[in-house]
Image (cartoon, rainbow, N blue to C red; front, side):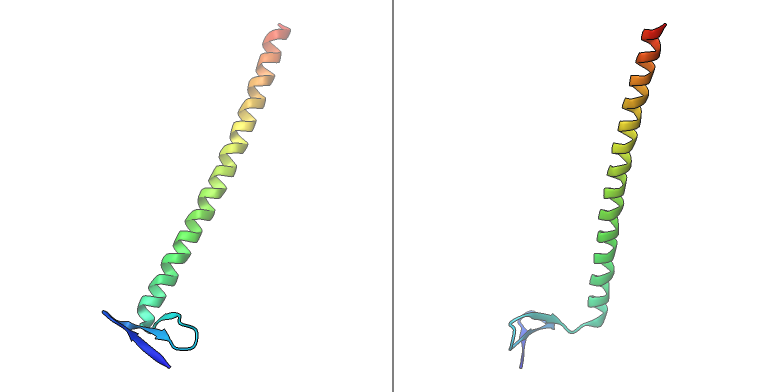
Length: 73
C-alpha cells in the first residue's frame, strides 16, 4: 500500500517499508545523473591529491639530490 506525501505529488510512502519513493522517472534519472557526477568529481579529486603527493615526494627527492651535489663541490 502506498500513501502520498503532502505537498509532493510525485512522492509516495511505501506502506511496508516506510520508505519514500519518487515515482517521477525524470526526477529519478536526474538524481542518478547528479550522483554520478558527484562520485566522479570525488574520484577525480582523490586522484589529483595522490598526484600532488607524488609530485611533492619527487620534488623533495630532487632537492635532496641537488643539496648532495652542491655539498660534494
